[in-house]
Amino acid sequence: MKTLFKSRKEAVIVVVALAAHLALLSTQIPKVSSTPLLRNWAMEFVLPFLRGAVGSVSSMTGLWEDYVRLRVDKEEHERLKSQVQDYRQTILVYEEEVRRLKRLEVLDLVKVALNRPSVAANVIGGDGRMGYSSRVVDKGSNSGISRDSPVINAEGVVGRVVHVSSNSAVVQLISDMDSGVGILLETSRATGVLRGSGQQTATIHYVPLTEKASPGERVITSGLDQIYPKGLLVGNVLSATSGRTGSQQLTVAIAARMKKLEEVLILKKESTG
Image (cartoon, rainbow, N blue to C red; front, side):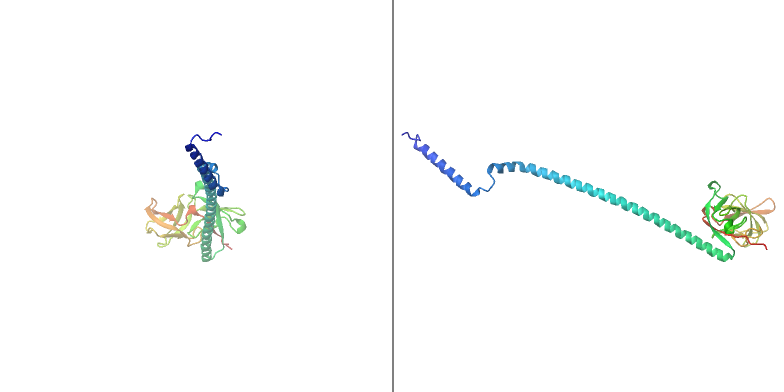
């Protein structure tokens, strides 16, 4: 029988190899449930790619959540902005109503002080190109208003009614160039006629040169024109110049602001019976 190994050295090598293999197998037996070596290598190989993929998904999710959050924040901002604008508009309306009520309260005080039948009216129109000529008010003959009814406000004389309908009237302002008001200088007691200039100033005619008019002197109605009752404020003297007819001409600042008329008081004509 032939020998399996050519030399003793080869037999020793084979025996050692078998022993080593058995030893390796014996170490693997208790770890049957653990991950095989090749699978472990495979998992270690793909782990960086999996981490990258999971990180990308997480980043996309975060970006989407940030986008949604920004959209929600923007919509909330726009809603709050619109709400603030509504609140501001409401406040403006309330403030305007408070101012209107204060003006009406002052007119009521004027009405009581005059102790004369009168009607409060709102200015509802007027020719913007002729801002110092006329205004339309929302009271007419149905409220007892008639032609030549004097019109005033809390600041002073405004004008007189020149046209009347059932529920409205046209008021000629004292600033109109065709208007005329009998006046009295409060200090000197000199009389004259005030004519409008189409501006916020007017001119007083027929004041004798012997009468001294001081700048700032109050100008009131004289009652001589049979339209305006005596004692209503018209304005204040600004300056005086000598005229050609032996009289002086006074420039007056009208007290009532003609381009800011909103509420007025119309005095009913007194009966002559």
